Amino acid sequence: MRIPKWEKIEVKETEERHIAQLLIDAKIGEAPLLIILKSEVASEVEEIITKIENQVRNSHFDISLPYPLYILSPLAKPRTNLNIVRNLGELPQHFVVKTKRLKSKEEALLKKTSVLSHKLRSHDLTDKRTYIKSQFSLNRVLRDLTRENAYYETLIKQLRSNTNE
Image (cartoon, rainbow, N blue to C red; front, side, top):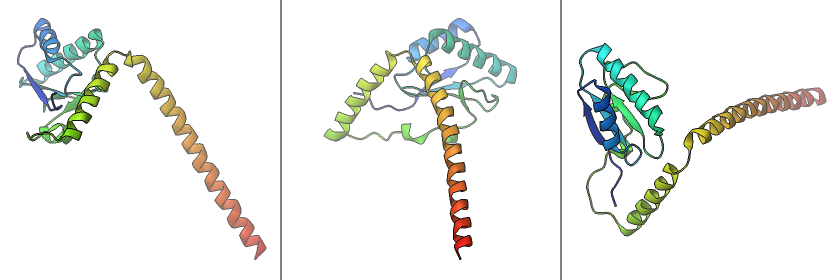
């Protein structure tokens, strides 16, 4: 059983076949993945990121579940679909693992995690993600209305207490 820790891939070529093969070999979703772009030219970096984005979209990979995909490049512009960081300090630190022997409880949890991640990969996550986003926005509206209602209730209580005095 493997502990999930950062898998690093360096992309040096801009050829689409090369990028596609790197992503297939990387096994997106089986471990947290960090793609390091070595290019020093901003236009090449944007071209590579676009190709990665297209490849992820065409392959129906989910870049955040069960394990995230990050792209490291100081020249990249932020995008909504991909997690792009400018330096290693911006990466989540919980995937930085010091090697040590696992205890039996930790091993059992790791086995459970791997089973759940395999179950997650077998589902169509794009439909679930749109459902979650719609529910998220509805819950925000409900939260705002509840806050407004609570504000009006406290206002009414204060007015009633002032009129009784």
